Length: 424
Image (tube, rainbow, N blue to C red):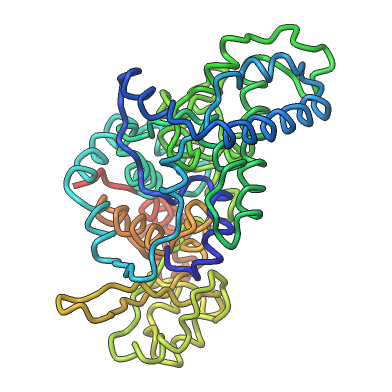
């Protein structure tokens, strides 16, 4: 959200989820069809069908999936003109507004729902936190911001969304690159649905053992208008690479299984470099805003050491002290700039120092606004945005007469550092 626009548009679809705003969910098939079956003129539809069939033929040949099965699954696929409008970049007069974005997602309804979700899944969240190192609050915050715990998972058929964006993307400077990204996601969707229906890849035994009804149901499932699926809004490629079976029922269901969603978010974050026990970001010192402004280039790259930022006055010394809630001085960071207009309409910016874990959240959704919102949502649930590393140095045995042994002290501190409280 806060990157250079061209960069954001090129990489949007490759994160775990879509960085587009969530769409209202609906349980009405009639309501869904009123959106799904919007079609373009006959000439456009003809080109769409020709390009889609070519891709299906390619996939059939490379993966040895029966072409008839693929064609049957996409027989009623249509373009959705409204989606092309939704993915267009904002107009030149649009002003990014961090405060408005934050207010939209860190608000009472989501926070209340987050506490309920936490309570309902507390034991499993603790288990995933221990296994992945990702705090429960971060996982809860991500699912809350994405879909309010399944309330807003999108109301477009995923095969229509990805087909539209793969073969009928709006006229933008990066149209070829964007279409290729969505072609890749469409292929990932087909392979995901094939394996979910019981098929193997490559499918050397044809369609034997494949549940055609489940295959088609998977292709027709709801998604956001960029093709993200389920409670955590994973793109098909992320489902195939990072989603896991959290509830142990033998299949991955991000739409109906909170445990699958929780475990998958934790796995995604771990695989993308989450550092257990480390904070996400630090606010810039007020008197160092000019220095931070100089270093803010919109690029999500860890390029400055924390020690360098301390020397520039951007961070304080404690933030470079691992035992006092900070990080190691040689840890890498970057400047996060979050613009917003003030009451008079003048441009203002709030600055943060993004650490490794901030960048990990950015891999989930390519937006500075999003990543900082996750961090602050988690803090509202009780997350301590500071290091949780136990003190290794203890007093010598000579100084601990009539007290706990040194090993007992270390063990005690480690246990205390891992204790978590339920959200207030």
